Length: 111
Image (cartoon, rainbow, N blue to C red; front, side, top):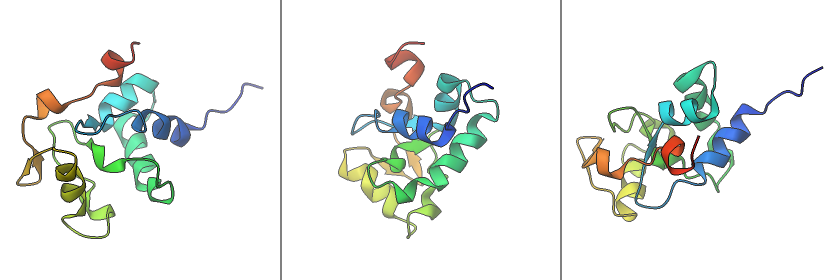
């Protein structure tokens, strides 16, 4: 019987590698990990990440830099504040200079 993958833990391991001041996307993580359910699976993992304080979930945004997960942080501005504390500017719930802030694990870690 093949070994079962722990997708959530794999997602958390990648998210822990995202440097301060950078963001990544649900889709980028999914592509890097070859997840069949794709970005949706990463979203589910991120929803459950709050019991893992060492996972910087605030650094994961949608494919155009929007803070789609902000409602999971206990307040409407907490995710933005965490990013801004790391030097990431956010306007209208979107990362400013998204393409220069983007950290793609497939590129950064090699695939």
